[in-house]
Image (cartoon, rainbow, N blue to C red; front, top):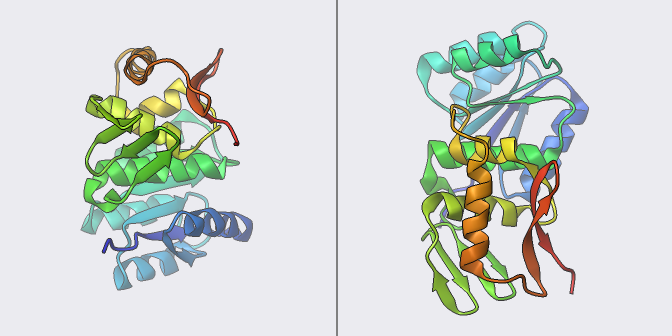
Length: 230
């Protein structure tokens, strides 16, 4: 039986805490909340989580100091939240060892997608039961296997991961940059058209569009995995 993934949220805004709890628990995660940095560190040491969601601006001890303290002991994945969009904050966070960075206000579905991506990069064994079943299609991330119309389709690892992240969040639009960060990582310095190339390969391997679902291009934005409600 797979262990339940534990997320520690260190955030002083009750609304954001409630929002994260709602979406994260729906996603099967166990969530703990701390409303200030000192309490968050105590909870971190008492019951080490699999991932930390950390606000920057907090009373008593800010997110930078909390991040420094966590990195003194472990490499637990950290996603920073902030109301600031300046590149300085983003670079400072990465210098301190954060794994991802999200500016408020944010789409909770995007946060959930980033949680999955960060956890997968940090410890792929945490996501051993991610099987998506749709008409004519089964995506098994544990075995890196795709079954289309009862036949196994050979997808390269990045193609598999790209299809999987799109299919988790059906009908949600992702920009190319979001997909690059989630699949290739924040330090990827290649051509953004890499996403386009992989999408084309996925389409070629899965054949023509069918009546149930398709990978759709959203012009000027990115892609989404569109599913028809039958």
